[in-house]
Length: 224
Image (tube, rainbow, N blue to C red; front, top):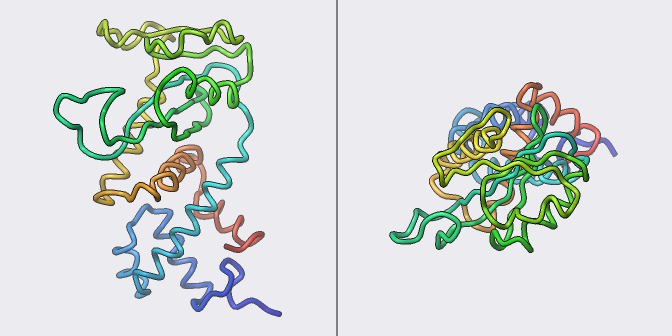
C-alpha cells in the first residue's frame, strides 16, 4: 500500500501541506498563526503539533549520559507566585531539575519536589561518576561528593553569581529561554507541560542545526 503522506500515518493532508506545517512549527509559530498561514484547521494543526512534540519527547529520552563539567539547577513553572510563597516552596508551581553539559546538551525532568531524595536519583541516572558538578548552595546537593562527583557551589544567597568557572549561568540561560517560549501560549495545561518542556530541551540541543531537516528526516524513516 502506498501512503498518501510518508511523514504522517492516516493523513488527510498532502506531504506539501505537512511540510508547510512543519516549517511553521520549526519557526516556533503557534497553532493559530500556522492555521492562518497554511489554511488548515487549527484543530488539525494542534493534533500534528502534539504528535511532533511527542516524538521530540521520545528522542530526548534516548540521549547518552553526561560527563565532564555539568551544571545542575532547579526551576519552577506554572501559576504566578502566591504572595508569601517564594522560591523552592512556591505553591502551584511545577518543579523541574535541569542538567546542562557545558558546551553540550541539556536534560530536564519534572520532579515532585526539590528534596535530596528526588534530585539525587536524576543526577546519578544522567551524570557519570567523576564528573564535575556545579550547583548553587541548596542543601539537597550536599551528598554529591559522597556519590562520586567533584562538586563546586555558587552561593546566590550571598549575592554570588560567578567565581571563575564556578557558576550555573548556562542552565539558567536555558530556564530563561524556556520561560520566554512558554509565555506565547498564554498558559499551558499541566498535563501537556512535559511535552512543551521537552520541546524546549530538544530545540535548545539542536539550536545550531537545521531543525526542519532533522525532524523531516526522522519522520520519513518513522512516520508520526
